Image (tube, rainbow, N blue to C red; front, side, top):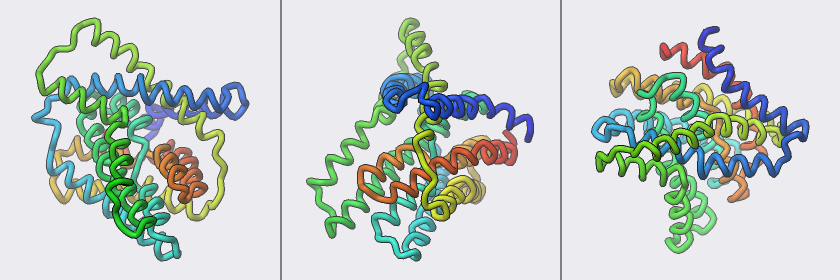
Length: 307
């Protein structure tokens, strides 16, 4: 446990450094926003494209892996929705809490950290988790919120939001990389070096930006946020791990899936909460709590999966 903890410590150290810089105002709030924008549109996109371009497409999609992750994640999502509804929340707000229970910070934290810790073999499973989260569950929350607010689906209002999801730089960079891999094109030396240098900025930049963004968050609605954090850090990896076991997913891929599910609540859940005006305080606090606790829970999960 100690050895794994020490391996993850530098990653959380970068988060702590970003938090300290922002909390002391050495790094202003607008600086964090612009750094996040650089990582999101450039550095992380370069990293994802390069990873995807090197993948063996025949080995990328594993139906049992996809079904296991979907089944486990959907179970936690439904549980989060049910708990919220039992507390008297409306459907849209309950769906936002459900989203908080199972959308992890795969892009900014999972891709940089898990690939380094688990090796290049982890790239395919991590990208599969990211694709499912973004295409399936981001679409699901969008449709539910629109349907609950407008008493049904209206194509004219839903299509622009869905186009926005598909135009996400992470989705576009992965699709472009997979297309490159599908054409079996080699990466020219200068292009490969360019992507390597730019992509190398993703890990420190993303982790620093996570920490800087946490400095502005406050602990409010602690009880509800603690429940959301528990669901994300404990129930989600447990659910997908059991689903992977039940569907006999290859052990290494199952371990990567569980590790990805153990990641803290993603910042893009707060972006959605802010956009829709739903559960913003709870989501913000859940991001802060789950990120702080994940310094202990992620090493524990990685020990359990034998990483």
